[in-house]
Length: 165
Image 1 (cartoon, rainbow, N blue to C red):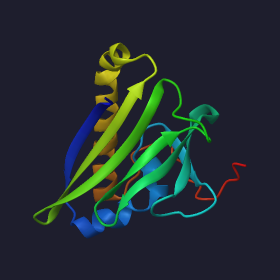
Image 2: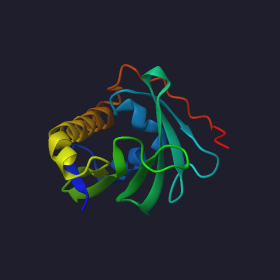
Image 3: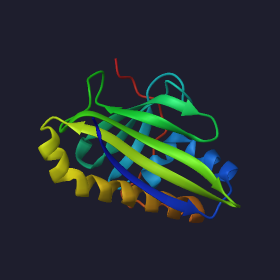
């Protein structure tokens, strides 16, 4: 049974405006701490099957592929590294974004489902850290979507395609 880290925030924007930004998968470096850019793998740049590489400081990267897509309401990304499974310390990891109308505003819930290679003991030890990361991403997303100002000083987006053959 995977562990779950989740956080929900209310955005002062209608659901259509939030979805218009959320569906643009190149925007993540504006609100995810530590990302320096994003490049799409060859193929789709939106919807089921889309895959991107998010870049981090020091040349590190993580691949994310859309494994579920609900038009207008959210999606799920599988976190992996190249064609392999999830990177260390994860045995498996996914990240979901879900929208829900709340009057003229929108509630967005971010959730990371994961299991660690070290088992339940490591999951319990790291649960607080993962919850904090998901909360920070949600709060940064809210600030970026509402103000248009990047919340990540390390960001230098590149929307170019990359060859991962």
